[in-house]
Image 1 (cartoon, rainbow over the protein chains, first blue to last red):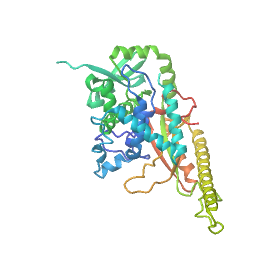
Image 2 (cartoon, rainbow over the protein chains, first blue to last red; image 1 turned 120 degrees about the vertical axis):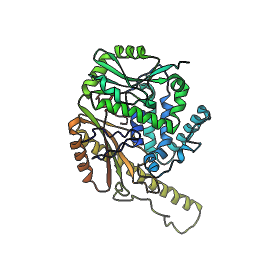
Image 3 (cartoon, chains in turn cyan, blue; image 1 turned 90 degrees about the horizontal axis):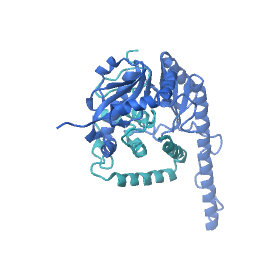
Image 4 (spheres, chains in turn green, yellow; image 1 turned 60 degrees about the horizontal axis):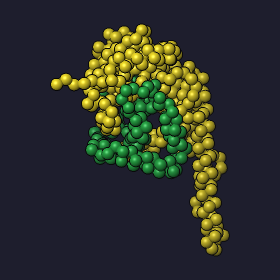
Length: 125
Length: 276
């Protein structure tokens, strides 16, 4: 094994291996959702980031693939780049959207997201 | 003018040789530095307060391009350390005012960190995702909702309403059946894989299969999103075993990722799942 980790730091060539290279979606899933939560001095609302990733999942699962194809539309999509937009407003919209999704057909999956989020609060010490 | 810096914490490690950090790039290409307290070392790096304090950090993480760069850098540092010694990955976005605050953290939680690091030493995490293809979860009967039911010949509205309700009930029942079978199958595969691992976790299922892009059809419904802690030397063996488990199941597709630093087990190797 030439490279014990499937990490693909930006710019580094991907290692061929038994397993798939770490996609951006896989990395985000781990660094945002896993890893021990310690309350540092600077408050980051992980819930907001999780909400963001729910939306990002709709597009970002394939960011690596899309980039390979030279597609970078999400970098210019105003709904995906917060720019000067008010985060509070954006979060409100996200929550509404998530509510709609949860009320929709993919109920079991969304219930899990709901449970996870419900569980995420107390875990944040 | 001098810029103020905050301390970003990537991970807590045991028996870390600080020399390996010299060649590792942190967020924004910045340096990665050890903050040691007895046998434990926090792997940290300075980040500009103007760009990483409070709202600025939140805003930065909400920008997909920035989020990607930070996530890759955070993961890159953790992976580099994990290749050398036991490591406890920290959730992205753990930032302290200065190194002294990090030392306080290490001192306060020394026993807990040491215990978890003991469980994670010489182990890596493998990620396994399994999808059920179309039909793989179909039942033996009434798996798909029937088309318009041939009622008693369009007599009146109540008949049409009853037919609709009946059809709708059948649709919901078929969906419930599929969900039930998906849950059962996911649990069964997870049980088989858990038996091969030192510890296992089920993570929330994802609503979008990775290949459902660029014009490709969705490849099915995810039935398992698991993480398995295995000996560092046994990752290839585990991967092969996982492939064998799913290869026996018609219509199911599997993806193994890793080996990863033990992100999913950073709070210990207890058996609690993200989902029941």
